[in-house]
Length: 233
Length: 167
Image (cartoon, rainbow over all chains, first blue to last red; front, top):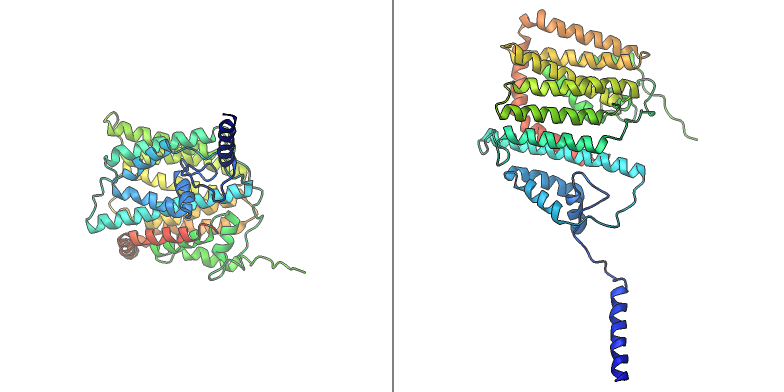
């Protein structure tokens, strides 16, 4: 009898030891991300599980809207079912800011591609322009707008806009970020706006005004200087 | 209220709320007025906050949005036969307004002031003198082309933003 007891206790110890021992291969668990969130962290969680880029999963998720809006319903159900990750990565403020910028650009690019494909399909005649979702647009858009508004309000009630201390004092054309004469590059730096977005706006405005808008470009070229060169020792 | 995101949230909520009321036939307002009103509600405080905080990027976008919303509301009240024609003058006027506000934000930069005056004056000329020269017809043709290629432009823009998202 004591032998049997000893054997049982040894077995119990062995299983306890096995349970407490860290696994050499970490077990992958599908869960919502806590550190990289746009809406509920579902896409980021799936990307971590599949070892993919979160941006790619987000674009694919956005494009599912073209399938009648079922993707949005699947997203909501997944967000409700999946647990939130417990040990999230600790990010510095700089990392958080760069992640926010990247996420914003990802969503913006997804929306642009989505709108482009939608209009192309409407143009060809494959889709009706009146419905994007299974419900009529007149109901879906106001609802989404209200939900988005409430979310923004809930997130930012106690947050204040921080003043920008990094503004350059004067405008100068850029030497480093230039395609022709550095006007848009300099303006992008002065305004803290992506210079390529400014270039696109300039080109579109010039085209739609038959070149009249380019007077501004010429004026800025003639009456502003290049930024001073930095000297490194 | 010192946060443009709160204002943005309220604007989205108001736009959605009034659109929903319109859908339920409680009110009868054109979409342009609802969207235009919501944008104006966002743009005016944001310009004020941006001028206070020195956020030039937000100042530019809020000014553009304000001008666009004014165009939307005017378009809903008055019957404008040549809707493409107003785009021609609007681009010049909006450009001028943005540069004027940038001058107000930093009065040392005279280049913004003079270029804004040039653009606003040109926008005035386009609706008075230039209109008779047949400029709008050519601009309309280009506008039609842009509209036809709009999906391609949007997709290319989207891919461009996606590729450069980490910059």
